[in-house]
Image (cartoon, rainbow, N blue to C red; front, side, top):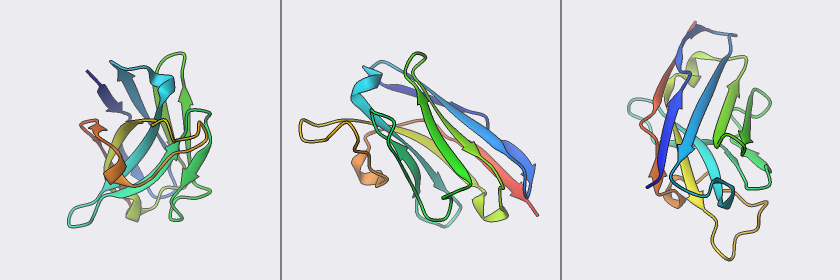
Length: 129
């Protein structure tokens, strides 16, 4: 059974930093690509970043250059380092996992929420101006 547990959310002032963690269990971590998503009240869920099995990454334009996604396969954890935070980054942040299909290369990942079946419970990030 896939389990994803996020941590590291909180409240910061604009310009500050936070590091989110997502501890994964119940599956062969290296066979999965991982994603971070966020959802603000009244808005659709947005794919913030994803990381492939070989650690190739993809970012939403809104966070490119400020956020960094990484993974540590030794401890089955994916991270999201968030720098230069803005009030518009305020949202619930979710970790998600997707097993690579036979047709997915090791460098492939997706930021589309419809591609993910396993989700964490979320961690709140609030950025004040």
